[in-house]
Length: 477
Image (cartoon, rainbow, N blue to C red):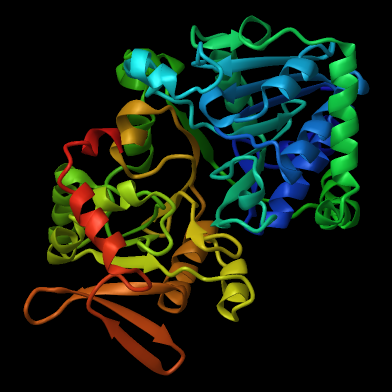
């Protein structure tokens, strides 16, 4: 393709036939800058797909980046799950009037406000969501991973922050991703925004653009403006100097028909993932914020352990989990997992500014946080998965998901080593005491503290989680 990105990446791709180049985006600010700069660097197309897009500082700035690209003549296609765009109807309707911007909503709600009414009348359909996340420029470079578009994913604002992980890719896997976006874009569940949202005119578009510019000028947004202005990312990418790891990379993705209750055998990410990873021989290292293994998963881990495969898992602790109901679905499996031989760690809630934060920023589990959101796992020091897929029933059976499998010993072993180094600093290690009861081991330098219940939580919260665990809703979590 005759674009700046195409001219920059084609010589690199030709030097690595059959392989794709990837760069891990661990730091939240780098992840924001990469998206903004890809939008600035696009000459022909931008294909953008997200589960959540908030009308906050970073969300507004990235919408403005898409608008500026369209003003340059770039064709912008924005596909958003309708469950995660609260407060955006007016802005999206206005942007959709631009001749070079087309917006579609995935599995939309008929009633716009309040949306929850739709669950009362059409739950079986609306319960299925598009959890995919991708940002592709000129069909040449793409970002996928765990981050949605909202301040908490990019380290902004005062709310809960998420430790997350994305990756930038160039090469053949981007072509696979572009084809996958086209499949979602043209699927029966993707509706043109104009058929769902209220009519909008040029005056509304002008107002949205004005609002976004004013947002970018605020003191809260200034650090993001500086991040983009000072970033060497785009310059290095266009000059061919960005340091990629080259390896065979395979896209795994659910068929969009999954939300309609159709489950084609080869169209499920979970099955594609199992085929791509194969049978582990030595070590499985899993990072999942929402981890509900179910009885089937526990049995699978038990079989792996009995065959000599070590299994290590990092998930959120109760104090760090942003969804208590999901934690309830996980908590009842802690003892069976430990009895099966799984090494289990729960991320501590780490407020910004603590010394441990800088350690997290250097890890593959993402930058600073009070809650884990990265979804990744490594197998046998050979293969690494990064994407949107959680190890829970919702990701397997209900939502659509997307990710890359990277056959890179270099990246995989780095992730495994960092996991081993960091979990003992940033997480509680769960063990069973002599009586078979749970204990949480907290390490602070030379100090070792043992907790007999979920650390950092009150009795009422623990009682609620215990109560939730008896509800017959595991298949929905």
